[in-house]
Image 1 (tube, rainbow, N blue to C red):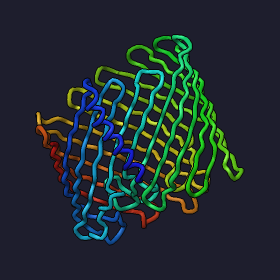
Image 2: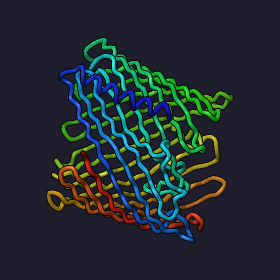
Image 3: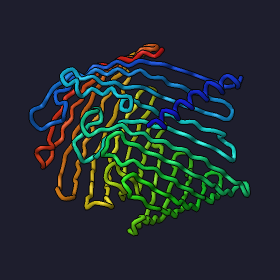
Image 4: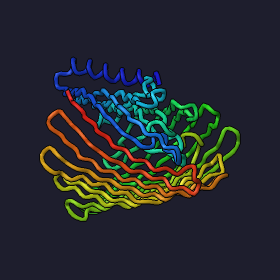
Length: 413
């Protein structure tokens, strides 16, 4: 976590120094302050003995955008303090817990050699199976620090054929002791052929070394073939299919097919249909390596300030180190409607039917419904929102209903 602070500081100092020495550079700095008050009728998401509370959030932050000939930097950084009126012993105010960041620096875009450095600090669920809610920072949540460094070199052998050599360093740290901190080193090579201005194919090989603090280390090799095509002005297709093998340091091994498919079709200027499928290995916060499959079918509408989206989704996760399988299917809807120049209203709804199979099997129906009235005038933003959540499980202790009302205001300086 100290590494993350150092990285963000280096990015900010570098930007300020570069802006001094580069006359053509563009630098924009926007400080802000957000104050929020929330009422919740079930702070701990309990099935009984619900405890209400008032939660005050104080979040100073800064956004920075820097653009020069060889450098692009985007930084969003804030400190999110939470104070609980009736449970002040649960206040979230330690520096390691309050940081939030999304910082990316890209160097030498459009040149043979490129470099990308990023830092992401978020608040996430430790285990999606356990009771949790996105806006509840107390129950089953932890702060996660993720650092990436990605240098890449493209060797153009002909105008339509290139070899791409890349390396990725990926480090993840969890503040909670239950999280499995890890780092990955991966090297890759791709042979990319442009068949036309709209079509390309690639052959790809990746070797990844995974090192975890608990000792579940392994090496992973991926062999894939990629295909991308822009089929006319409305239809685009991106796909990749291949095979992965994993060898643990203790002698165990596993393998599986991997792949992805993404199809986007513009039904009209405002309406877009999309379909996605993804299958491969990933790492969970507490249970190690998983085989994951996911699919979605979505419809998006954008016209002027009116936006709407609807999505059907499915995902399945098999855990390699435990006898556990998670599966979920559901739908979500988002709608944003402008009411005037300054006012808008938003609605969202989600339903998920999930099943968890391990030592204790569980079936869950999850519901979420939210609405908000938003106001924006010059440098001031305000929002009044309501959210209803329900978790209906066949394990009674995991049931809960939660209502929250939130009033927030943000001033940008």
